[in-house]
Image (cartoon, rainbow, N blue to C red; front, side, top):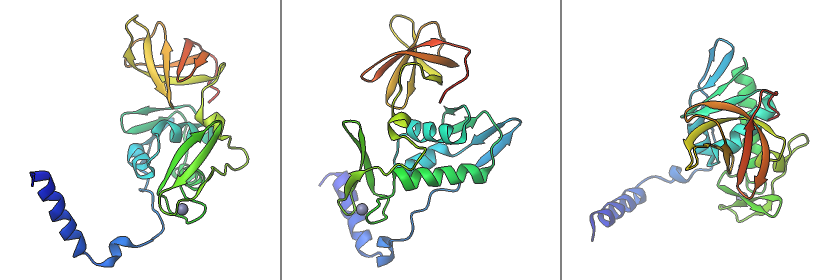
Length: 211
Ligand SMILES: [Zn+2]
């Protein structure tokens, strides 16, 4: 037995001795948001803790949030910085909406789901009960538009890397966004000029962000 196997055997034995409550079906709870107002900005300090709990791509959650709250904002490390003053209650409501729409299984109410794309349809697959159904997106929320970049979108993107040709590279949802003439470590406003598969090209702009 390797040290790892030893450890897992031990863990299994420990679990057997736990009372049944470990398997309880309490209502899924999202970590309480740590929200700070800093001047005209609002910071969600534990954003990544929330998306880890939801097991969703932070960029997907962020794009939903920005669209619903109607504010620009960025992911910075484990925090999100929103460039408007927004109440904690309002943000919490939107995170709850996201959870109800994109995480909770409509059949069994459990959060143990995976979001998969089938063609243009977002499907929630439930690992608890096996349900498999399209995400039930409420009026006003378009799953395809929260989930995909398209030409003409104006976004704020954090340049996290530099490519071989010296172009800045950022990430937005599932997309790599390539922006010539930018510097690593900066956040820039970009108009998407071309989207192919999972790569988008953008040009610097001063127009208002559209998402
Ligand atoms: Zn289910």
